[in-house]
Amino acid sequence: MVNMRMDDCDCIILCGGLGTRLQSVTGDTPKVMAEVNGAPFLDLIIGHLKDQGIERIILCTGHKADLVEDYYREHNFGITIDFSREDKPLGTGGALKNAQEIISSDTFFVFNGDSFLPADLQALLDFHKEKDAVASILVSRVSEAKDFGSLEIDASGRVTGFCEKIEGNVQPLVNAGVYCFDREVFSLMPEEENFSLETNLFPSLVGKQFCGYLTGQKFMDIGTPQRYESVKANLKKE
View (cartoon, rainbow, N blue to C red):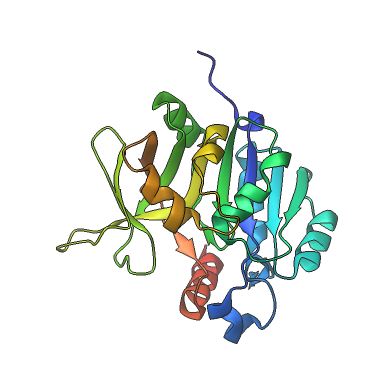
């Protein structure tokens, strides 16, 4: 079988959230546009995707959509950037389902727009195909999982539990906010217009063609003022 290449896959970035917890620092600026090293945080993700060989990105916009869309029409990184706008909050799952008609590839990536992990996407794609998965999720270890979706995977890479309570002192596995999906996933989504990937979809996929790809790379997100300041400090050092 010929391996799929990165330029065969669209990448969808979920960037419509209000970012309520970050408003004390960023005001009404969309969370994905929060400044890191003089540029929007979203630039970091898009630059990485381009470096990995992605040629088409779809931004799922919502809060302050005009601001995000206008910026990326002017700063397109030399790749194709299209937009799927939600006129009302749809949740992470609803935003993805809303973009279904403009996703052109049968296999595609999805990124949370408020977190970043410099993943080897070709390795994730190869893993996804090797496992014949409908959904594959990038998994990372953190010292504290209370703010993240925790999960368990078996020796074959199948997800055996999602958002389960972690017992003991073992470093928990968490959802790193990077996914590889086949188009079939849309048929497994809830019928509701507004729903969450993390709460409403992923738990329902446990025991099906749902796999977790473990990475040792550092996971960062800007979901709270404390983590936002930490990301800025760490990236400035690098």
